[in-house]
Length: 583
Image 1 (cartoon, helix red, strand yellow):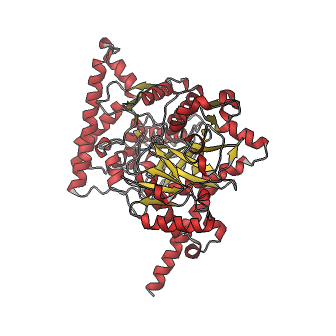
Image 2 (image 1 turned 30 degrees about the horizontal axis):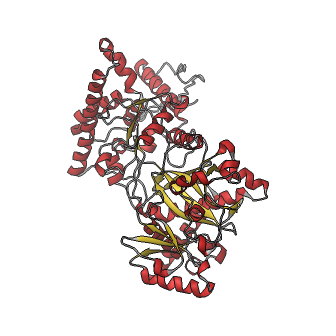
Image 3 (image 1 turned 135 degrees about the horizontal axis):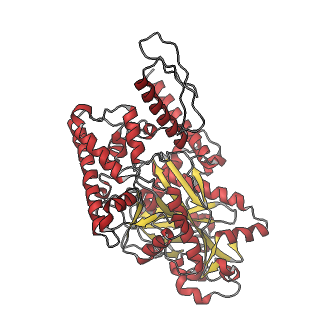
């Protein structure tokens, strides 16, 4: 390595510093004309710089955290620029300084609580306090916040896996210095106060536009309208890619539109046996309140509902109707970063499919939801896919990987089916994600339910927040257990040194009058390096170190790239229209 060490303001010639390949024990050869103290300082600084570049791949902490304030979620959320999508933090105002002071003081207080918790822990060696603190300062802790025993059980089992053996259960949760919190219910806004941006929580706030049936339908319709063929200059084939949900109405306020749509289809079909609709209560899950009707007189509601055109020509396997439960992990909505799990569950009806009108009320045929089919498991015979799948089947479900193999054997292009699934998932996320604010702490698993018709078109049925983690069979344990382990390994909240964080916060708090958040980049780098134990956290767009059985679908997938082109095209067209108006 050769570095210019010429002194500013002097006429001295450029000196060459030659260092060995070892970034720690580098030898430095400098002209003896330089003062000894300057030589030693230069040597130390260069060794530290090269060592940090060596262990971080040449990146710097300040790329992710331009100021010390950027490590606090309060600032990353409140001061995000809507135009650029970048976090712009301004501390010149009194409010900005007070907010930062509060964040720093909170971290100091939390560390004191953390130490006190260690002292009170049963396994804490009272005679070796310093050693125990040093051990736990950098240890990764997880916290489970759920009243559902099946959630607690599967999360704990995941962390007991050898791949996640470096994790420990949070001692009591009062210090709020955990690395990852897995929560079932929707967190309150206060739950995110004063968190560090690299602490991770398993839920996003404000995702109803994706997970509530009526709002999802509106968002997709709006998205399709923006990118309709006349508006965006697309051909009909491209425009059809936004038609991902069956015809859907939200009642009661769209009742007149529903009546018009029902009547038009009735005239087109001529018979009621081809005009089926499925009724779903808004905001309910696990198949509760779902029914299939063919007569408009059967449509009644005492609460808001969604009524959706029933896919009466579903793609069948061995004569049985099925849908697919897929798992999509979102690590960011602004911008979108998402991964789809390559294993999932194909959920079948317990009886072979029939579209006859007299079979319409037989839930064993028409409703594939596992919660509904559970009461009919005794009706499954030897011809059912779940029986034929052996260990890859249970109740009325089979592993998607098993189904793909069987479909490949009969000549179905499953690679094409998979690409259609990804396109549907990406479109739904893009249509609904624009209204979800930046939440740097959050990640979430969503359950996407899709179905193919006989033309092998992929339809999105709904998106579920907090999909069921109940494990009633070895198949559930294998699929959902692997899903949780791979999710934790992918999210991989970074290690941070709690004591170093407290030390830095104390120093910056005492120096705030003379150097308020204006420390040099070198000092900032050193502080962040000590807090992060020299490891720079992953930034948006970088592939995670471990993806397990996940596949990234945004950014970087062909479906997302095509969508991004259209988004850029639409933005460009809007900009051109605005320019013409101003001429």
